[in-house]
Length: 200
Image 1 (cartoon, helix red, strand yellow):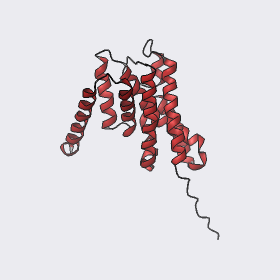
Image 2: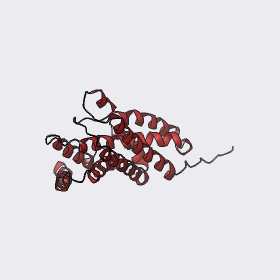
Image 3: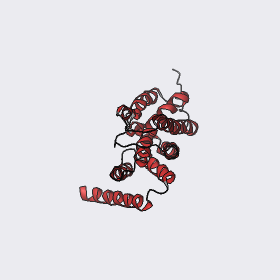
Image 4: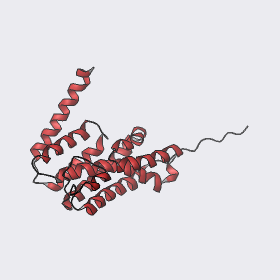
């Protein structure tokens, strides 16, 4: 089973890393958009891991913006879903609202898997809106010239001295992308189907 599944995944992983390597670091804006978007596509899967591995490698070359874009983008899906459950409460069940609260905390901790319950139920709407928000965050991180020198995400990285420059702008980028994801998903999500009321 490992060779049936593991080998193709590993090959895809290497192809994505080669693509990013060939792209270089000259176009910072495009790189920020691509890396942050990759973090939002499969929520902890091989595409997500390829972006992370690539940016970890860049740390050895003293190139820090890609890591900032990657870490920021990874926070967007879960926080965005939390925002959606808050602003469109009538479109979510009680269980989904509770999942939204948990997703917010997980997102702040850089655990993008907090969005998985939503993506599993509604992938055709959740994934595109997460990518949209991630792209916004990645673009802003690049425009703000944010740099992260440690391979860690979440708000806790702010507690590490000199780990991130322009901390306020970094948080602004995360918030902006998360809000874009939250609003866009709140708009496209279908309303909860009302249960038929039966009378005895």
